[in-house]
Length: 299
Image (cartoon, rainbow, N blue to C red; front, top):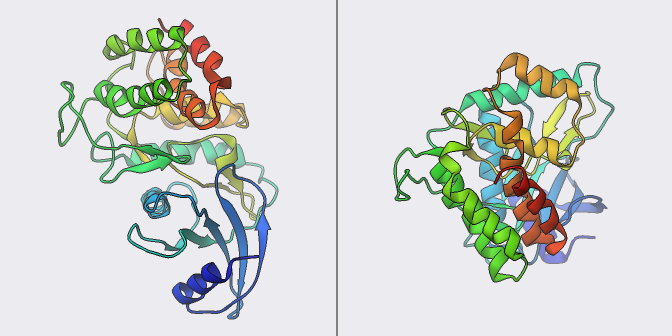
């Protein structure tokens, strides 16, 4: 059941009393509930008493940004706690019911993801920082020299805002092996020659593993739990291949809608490095070997 303070907040922001709740499964970091309201609505509530104050507001912004592309369904945001709220941290969304996939589910996902990426972003990064899991994710733009810029260089962004901060955190936490640290440091020196042909910033989900894709009761794909920003579209595609859960037809449909640049298959380990480093810092040294394996293919 919801705590009394949280139920009171939900009632206030949605304008209807909470009449019941049930815990929903899934998620390694937050608590999730289906909440019934006196006016007959049912909503999805995510909360975490230890969440950074800005986390759910940032996620709400990311969901709205993805929805603005009109490419794939994302949950409708109903309310989110602000960074200066003193009460419980929360995110309230429409409650989506799961169902079996339609016959064209995989094609719809591939074409929709291509359209999402084509919707683009003003620059590499975003106009606000957010989180991947519970880890802060900086979206401040950089140029090739590492300074702030209105529009930046992808290699500089991937180095300064993605790989280097996660390596530092792994070192500070005592997770980074000498092999891992030295491999990433060598990789960072050669990133401009490894990231692939120049492309405009794509509108990325940012944390697109199988657990962040659901099938709604009308059989259509829906993206949840983003860590959104403007980045290289191969980042999402590499993440999708990291832990499985995506049909080959999805990747084929994507390539038919938005052909990939030469060498994209060889860049998969490069763009899997960031989520692997995130997993090192979220869940411990058990993922160090996977980072080292990816580095062996790159440096």
